[in-house]
Structure formats: C-alpha cells, structure tokens
Image 1 (cartoon, one colour):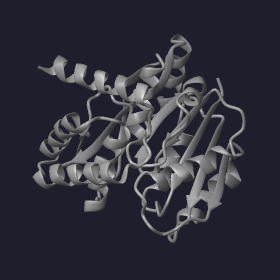
Image 2 (tube, rainbow, N blue to C red; image 1 turned 90 degrees about the vertical axis):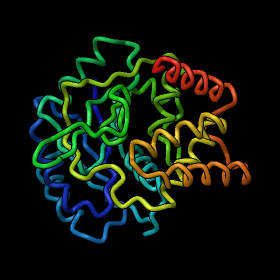
Image 3 (cartoon, rainbow, N blue to C red; image 1 turned 90 degrees about the horizontal axis):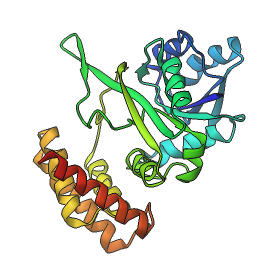
Image 4 (cartoon, helix red, strand yellow; image 1 turned 60 degrees about the horizontal axis):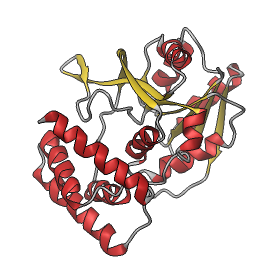
Amino acid sequence: MRISIVIPVHNEAAFLKDCLDSFLAQTYLPNELIIVDDNSSDDTYSIALPYAQKYDWITVVRRKSTDEHIPGKKVVDAFNFGLSHASDYDLIGKFDADIVLPPNYFEVMLNHFQSNWKLGMCSGLLFVEKNGNWVYENIAKKDHIRGPIKLYHKACFVKIGGLRLGVGWDTVDVLLAKYHDFDTYTDASLQVKHLRPTGHGYSTKNFQAKGEALYKMRYGLILTKLTALKMAWHAKNPILYFQMLIGYLKATISQLQRFVSPEEGKFIRKHRWQGIKNQL
C-alpha cells in the first residue's frame, strides 16, 4: 500500500527539524512526504529544503496565501494544495509539523490497514510534556482520530468528500467515516509527542469558530450546549462555553453553508446522543 503524507507548514521553524527527523527514523518509510510551505516568514523553507534535496521521497512546495489566520480553512487549503502534487496512493496522511513520531508509526499503521479492509481512518495518540514527563493530551477521548497525525484509506477519503474547509474538519471527517460504515481506530501503543499543545494562542475568534462548526455539523442547540459545556469544563474556562454558543448562534442567524447533508446530520446527532447515554 502506497503511503503519501502531506504536512502543511506556516512558520514552523522551531519544530520542523525534529518532526522531519522522526520521519527519517521510521522503520517503514512513507512513499512520499510533501511539505507545503504556506507563506512562511521564518526559516521554515530553508529548514525543509535540504531534506528534499537529499531524499527523493521528500518534496517541498511553496504556496502563497494570506497572512490572516483563518482557523481550519487555511490548513485545509494548504493540505489540498499539497494533495494536488501527490502521486497515486492507497493511504493519505495529513500531519502537522509540531509532532515527533515513534519509529514504528507507519509500520504499525500499515499493518492495521492491511488487516482490516473496513478501516477508513487510523492514528496513534498525542502526548504533551508536563513537568518533564510526556502525558496524554486530554482534550479528546482516546478513540478520536486527532488532526495532526491521521491516516485515511483512499476509499474512505474519497467517500467522505475530502476535508471540509473550516474548524471542525477533523471531527466531521471521523463522523462521516462512521456514517459511510468505515471503521476508525486509534492505537494507544503509538505515543506521538505534540511539541506545541493544542489551543496554544487560541483567540475568542477561534472559540466562536468551534460553535460555528457545531452548527455546520447540524448538532442542534441542545447538543451544542452540552458539547460546549464539556469543552469549557475540560479547559477550565467558563468563557469558552459562551463563546461557542455565540459562534453557533451567529452561524444560525447567518444561515452558513453546512458541512453535512440533513441525512448525515441526523446520523451525527444520533451517534452523539448514543455516546452521551453510554457515559451515563
């Protein structure tokens, strides 16, 4: 199975070398790694270029884009730009530049996909450093396929229609995979170091965008309130709850385009409510 990986990068000079070195150390190398320099103003490109010059399976492409931070959309646009440069593949990966993979990451991923023909998405788990120790980044359940380290089977990727342009793309893709009867799996033995914890530098706009994403996924108001409450509780930030609701209501008033169809939304709500009931 051919593995293609796309890493969108914007001003990632602080982390990129460690990330790429962890790719070189893999017991099973991807067939291609495409680094998309998305309008960086630091040394990101000069760090990436020598890797591409030395290894024929690594490519660096440059994309011109706005300097404005557009949550979700900017990274997906950069990913799609990289994807347009990919050769034929069986597994496509969207990875971030601020991660360090264990050496057997792709070997284990390949084994999972080859042993389960229904497997649509797979990943390891993200760990962050706290007081000198690497601990699980507890912002999602351990069965959730995290955005910085996920692999898709091509059949699943095509069936879900690729990645949605906005915050929530890495949640709706998992839900749509389930809707289309694909399996998803996280391997707890694959502990990936996340060098920059999720949420670093988040603004009010980011939090409102999360509420907007729940509208686009057709959660409905009650399920949105429960989701926002849970996220605010985990973040120990009550303001997050209100910001997410503001984002949801703004999207409702504006009647923004949805991520999913009414039928897909019905499945998503049922799936989420079942998850809540299972926790009671």
